[in-house]
Image (cartoon, rainbow, N blue to C red):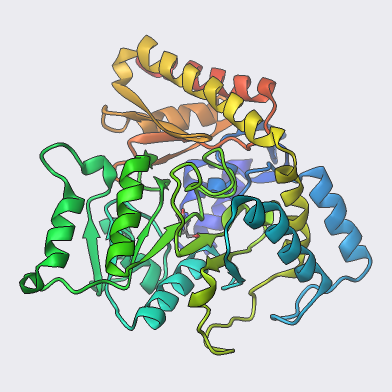
Amino acid sequence: MTQNELGIFEQLESEVRSYCRSFPTIFTKAKGYKMWDKEGNEYIDFFSGAGALNYGHNDPTMKKKLIEYISEDGITHSLDMATTAKADFIKKFNDVILKPRNLDYKIMFPGPTGTNTVESALKLARKVTGRTDVISFTNGFHGMTIGSLSVTGNAFKRKGAGIPLQNVVTMPYDNFVNDELDTLDYLERFLEDNGSGVEIPAAMILETVQGEGGINAARFEWLKRIEEICNRWGILLIVDDVQAGVGRTGTFFSFEKAGIKPDIVCLSKSLSGYGLPFAVTLFRPDLDIWEPGEHNGTFRGNNHAFVTATAALTYWENESFENEIQEKSTIIYDFLSKIVKDYPELKGEVKGRGFMVGISSEVDGLSNKVAAKAFENGLIMETSGPKDEVFKLFPPLNIDKDGLEKGLQIIEESVKELTK
Ligand code: PMP
């Protein structure tokens, strides 16, 4: 029955649709780490809306706050007028997230999506520096608009723009570096040598752990060197924490443990806590040079998202939350390492940081098969990397140990069925 009903999407929706092809059913309900389809089949969600549902589906506290707000006729849309919902969010974000981490950032609402925050960061860097070039990194993913796509290191996605995109130099990301090939050393030599033709760029943009690019976690030393180079040459460092932020790697910001302070930070996905479109761009106060109106948008700063995002920050008031993420991520790593060892046919390697993890398989197409088999067995998980070589585990951060273990068991079962 569901298969027939899916026909309506095939007939009427654009061919560009993608996730419905990997998970061919019609979903109706979701709660915590579980989703249900029309037939009543239950799935464990290790996908979490590609990182947009770090607190799971329909978190009860956020839901209650939102229902209260709506039932009291709280403002839904107000462009960027001042509202109490917005004031509450800004205050709590500053008190719970920025101040305790000694981060002095201005908060800007760039528009509803991750792509919007990236666009705003690139625009601001150009305006502040008066320069145009940007350094981005291989396998980085930053969004689908012309600007954010131009810094996305994925040839297939870039083809969607039809024509080559300009003003971007793509450098090898940390996982390409080895003893013989220190690409940052090369970069510095180019920057030092006026004859090289390399212009000082306006910004460098990177993810500290690449999500779409294959769960590549940059080493902290590499990130530190990037920061040093940016400081030395007056290049603005933009950390795109759209996917790796909001706790996914174990700390609220993915760069905290590396000890770096980006000039501009992009946040979206899980920031609303409830899966609502919401994004924030954070930047050093001295970069706050836009005139009123130089960057605006109809749907920036959605009030419903302010309400749920403020409620979501309560998780971060409690110190044990980070410890729990750490504890559960150790369970995931140990389990995945055992899978890699017990099933050598996978030719697998465990990758990632915190709750942003996966197994990369050297066997062509096998990761996609594992994800498809896991779906048949009741677990939702996606693949990433240039050849979809990584199956990617993104459970909600607040998943209980029982749910986590059940999900991991399904992965093992699926690997076993495919390799026996
Ligand atoms: N940056 C990163 C790191 C992302 O992972 C994504 C989305 N996958 C984006 C930007 C773009 O976000 P959105 O899809 O909300 O535009």
